[in-house]
Amino acid sequence: MKVMVVGGGGREHAIIKKIKENKNVDKIYALPGNGGISLDAECVDIGAKDIEKITAFAKENAIDFAIVAPDDPLVLGAVDALEEIGIKCFGPRKNAAIIEGSKVFSKNLMKKYGIPTAQYEVFDDAQKALEYIKTAPIPTVIKADGLALGKGVLICDTREKAIDGIKSIMLDKAFGESGNSIVIEEFLEGPEVSVLSFTDGETVIPMVSSMDHKRAKDNDEGLNTGGMGTIAPNPYYTDDVAKECMEKIFLPTIDAMNKEGRTFSGCLYFGLMLTKNGPKVIEYNCRFGDPETQVVLPLLESDLLDIMLKIADKDLKNASVKFSDGSACCVVVASEGYPESYEKGFEITMPSDKLIYCAGVKEDNGKLLSNGGRVLGVTETAPTLKDAIEKAYETTKKVTFKNAYYRKDIGQKALKALEV
Ligand code: AMP
Ligand code: GLY
Image (cartoon, rainbow, N blue to C red; front, side):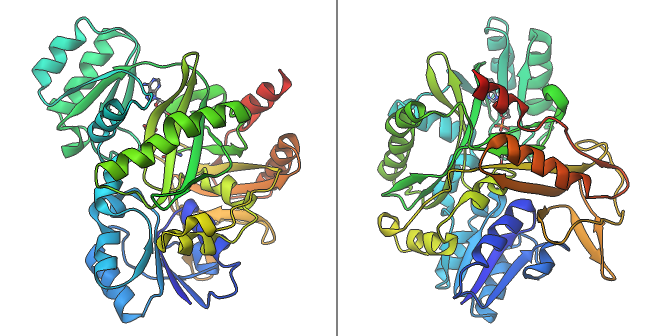
């Protein structure tokens, strides 16, 4: 079987390593992949957003199955285009990927179907937004409607910052057209949980829960990043919380999308906040999370490709989806200065017998060089979270490149939660 994976980061590397375990896989292509992924798949120099070239490549190479991993191609309709030429795919079609592609859409969906989320108002006129903010409760949260590389959310703890935020998104177009509309929403408090789920639009099977660490520096200080590390399972996500989320959030969301004629098939990511008034949706993503995938998939005991094929055949109910009882920790090794400016192009050395996912990595004359903000994700699993964290840091110490930077406290908040 020939499989094509669209994307080129740590998440895609984790997906590729997992599907390699399936004996029916003869060949994996990554579009574009990266220098580190090239150790596990054939990388093809086609960008993840270049849908025309992606479909042409799939046709020419008689691809049996395509996995579209990143948000951009999904929101642009990569799955629709591939399916049109008869290629079986994992991932939602464009009309369902909008659940991530438009925050206005997802907020209105939740309101219409009574799915718990922060209260909000939508604006497509900057003057009206500025008028509203004069009396809105502070802190407040301002979100650009469209995709903004994970940067379109502003938490504003003063009215002045909220005013500046509205101006920068709507008038200065800090996130381009993504800021034509904005959502201004209630600031929620509580532990955050990421729950990735498999769904074919009929059945929904949540994967093991996880916790991201979004800020650049220890103790959740510094700027927001794409994620500096993850652990799984998330100790705040107890069986009772899981049951409540299934009843009030997961099933109603799948149902709502069906009722809207936008059946969701693929991985639906629920970004949740466990508030004192119960779990609420902070965001939906139409794809696997990055770096959540780097801790979730190593704990998956079942065959990932089989699950994905069953989803494509709308037969998830007959798939075996089993996770280990153990824990996992992923420490992201970044280039010092990320998420702002940083230097790259430095030679990487790392142990070859460890689970290290390559994100911003390129290959040059047989050497691996740092090539981005988030460079590597070092994952270890163990029967307990404490051991998984310790092992992950031991392995991280064996990774070297000039200006390597990583947080030292991934998983510490989760460990504290386990103590109480
Ligand atoms: P996002 O870019 O949508 O992943 O949001 C980034 C982060 O902003 C989330 O992980 C939360 O920590 C925070 N956030 C988003 N919405 C809210 C909210 N309504 N209240 C408090 N924090 C929020
Ligand atoms: N780690 C958050 C995301 O994938 O959006």
